[in-house]
Structures are given as C-alpha cells and as structure tokens.
Image 1 (cartoon, rainbow, N blue to C red):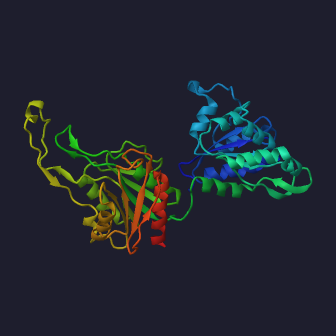
Image 2 (cartoon, helix red, strand yellow):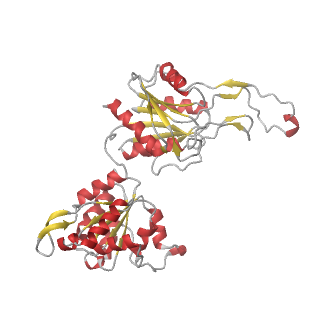
Image 3 (cartoon, one colour):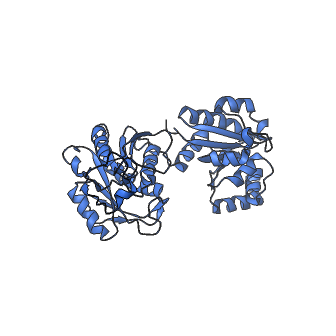
Length: 400
C-alpha cells in the first residue's frame, strides 16, 4: 500500500496516450492512494468521464465554471488538495499554456494555482516535439520548478516512428513515487517515534511544559511511512497536524510516555525519541486548583523525571535507538556525552536559538552523531521533513 494516504491529481489533455492513464489510476488506487482527475475537452475525445469516474472513484473535473457544493472554487480546491500533480499526456498545447501563463480552462487554471512543482509527461507527434517553439517551451519548463518526464522513441499514432511517445504508465508511477519520496526500503520494519512535549501537572489546570509542537516527530513519521515502514507515534502535547493514517498513542506526561515506550519497544525495530520530555515535575500535585491568593510566596518543589532513554539500556537488545539533544551551549560535547552515556546508535543535535531551528518552525538545522564514528555530520538549514530523510538514511544503513 505504498500510496496509502497520498492524494494524486492527474490532468489529462488531448492525446491518444490518454488511454494509458486508466492503468495508472487503477494502480494508484489499488495501492491505497486517492486519485482525482481533470480532463480537458480534447482529452474527453480519448477517454470518457464515465471511465475516469469508475476507475478513480471521484467525479471527473472538466468545467472551470461548474458549480461546486459549498461555494468551492474547483481549481483552487484541487490545487490545495493534491500531494502530487501529474499532467499526462501533456500536449504541446498545455506546455505552451503553462509557459505563457494562459489559464482558459480548468486544467491550465489549476496548474497556475498549484504551489508545488508539476510533473509533465509530454506526448505528441515527433515533428511537434522537434518544433522550435515546443523546444523553447520545454527549455523554460526545465529551468522552472516543474519537471519533465521525457517521452520515448517508438511507434506513434500517426503511423510513423519517432520521439514523442509518452512514457509508459509504470514509469510514470515510479516518478510519482520519487516525487513523493516513496520507496520500499523500510517495508516490513516497524518504527516507534515519540513526538511533542510532555506536561507535568502542578494542579488540575496548570502544568510545567515546553514549546515543542511535534513537527519534527511527525516529519519523521511521514518520512518512515513513505519508505514503507509501519509507524507508531507516542505523542505528548502537539500543536502540529499529524500525518494521515498513522497510529498515535497519547502520553502527556513523562511517566506515561516512559510506560508506552517500554510497552511498545519490543514489537518495533527502531525507536526515535524526538519528543521534548520534561526534565522536572512538581514533587507534589495539588488536587484542586491553586487559588490566586495562595500563589503569593508559593514555592514549587521539583523532582527529576525518569530518563526514558537511560532506562532502556537493559531492554533495547537488537533495537536501533535514536535520540535528540537540544542544546543551547557546548552542543557537540554534550551530544557526544549523551551518545555514549545512553548507549545510542545515533543522536541528533539541534540548537533552538539558531535562526530557523526554534520550536514550531518548519525548518531545522541539525548535526548527526553516529556510534563508532569520530566525525559528526553537520547539515545546513532545511525543512524538518528533509532532516528526517537524512536521519533515516543513517537508520537504513544500520538496519542493513
């Protein structure tokens, strides 16, 4: 089910290769993906709305001005919905519209509205492919954020042989997987990830906590799922949105999180402790809300919470353990000490005071330390998902 939870938008323009897309739609759905299709008027000459709707399980989108429930604007809604947008077949016409910003139908308007790269799979007569205008348009698209899946050379619909034949649907599927960072490297593996921050209650309405959003933990979960793993997230307090179709176990306090980690570690191959677990908790919790007048001169006595990673040293046999070190000074020395003291395979260092690396940010700047390696790997500022990919590159090497 490599497309589980993924939303694929396909645009079909007017070319005989449109018939090949029927296989692609069916294959994506069989592997857990959801598919919506935009088909141009010319595209409808080659594949019918009835066929598209039967295969995709969704209405075929054809009309820019077609009324939609709840006042939804079709091209905006479709552009926001999709994780991946493939145009196949992409005719010379739709390539020219894209380059020149023409938006005169639903497909071309949605292309302009889509914020991420669009994948084009051209298909046309070889003379059209070689035409200098088409060549110029392709050159512009290749230099943009969008990508081109090069056509093949072979038999064409006009009974000639030449370049312009659309890539086969199996290859298009592979390219979608690459775009979505989907692979099978972790198929059959089970990954346990902690995310978010813990809360240590002072009274029934107040707690000691931190600013962790859960974004890094959820980025790790998404990266693991995209590589085929079965993922469980033990989540503290999180403000970030979790990936779709992921198993989440709530554990708001350090004590609860420790219990859940111990209970589930045995059934997993890898544990990644990305949660920001509180180091201290109130020694005593008030049974009722502390009144304002009681706060004057109040002394809050704290005690250490259990160190979850340290407590696993005797039960982690055969498991790969990844920890995080959030440090604001002397980070390299502290990270190396934690790597050794807690017997970790990998530790990831980040400094929340560095620009782009703070709590709740979509980006992070990490340094990765690996057991048995003298040199750490310092990475530049990148999205948390990209950082997660780098971490899993190391995990996969260890699993091998």
